[in-house]
Length: 280
Image (cartoon, rainbow, N blue to C red; front, side, top):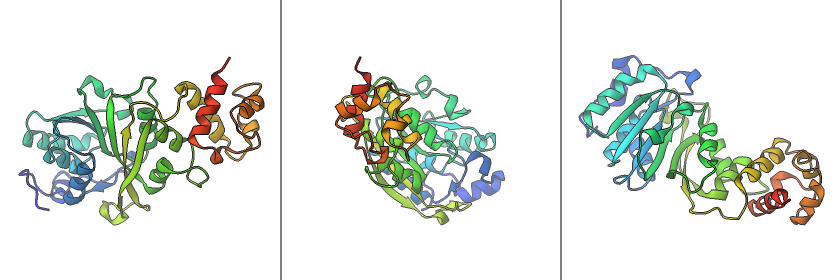
């Protein structure tokens, strides 16, 4: 796709600024503007939304988001080498792009953005799961964001949408599916990136629900799932013994066999257990 914003192709941008992806920053640059535009479209109509993008790098997805009509984009970039490139994009889209040089784990986007808010990012591999967990665990719900459109390693994407009993099922699936609806919407091969990673990548679209699927106290559910999946090979009566002294009785009261293992429990069963654990 020829650029429509008057900016040069991404390969030319990278060559001009001497950029190279750094493994220490979890970087793999996606240079095909057709693909970045397609990812931006997976987030839906952005014309009435502010968008948070983490780790824009040379700005391929940033350009896609702006070209697709995002009201405003906040790009949080840790790598100072990428800032001049992002400034060029900001000039091409006056008043619609704000750039923050910093660590996304330490930046509060609500200091810069107004709702409705969507988060769209090709997340750096080294912080992607931690960021997702933070976005899924705020004490108040619904959250500030309405949807997340995020690229992960395929293995992580499968963990987000996994069903009970599957090898990929774990705490990330419970967190993602309790308060939101998640699905994989795109797959990308390694050769789409520079440099090519050793794994395939997938884009996951997560839509926040107005209320969780099953009633449970968030703090208790998070504590129960962390303990259960932290020792997933153990029976629940062993992995959860630190959660409550009478955990076997509470498991039985929730309709769960104490000899069962975490990977076999449905989301509904985890919520039932969280309610039992929270009971005085």
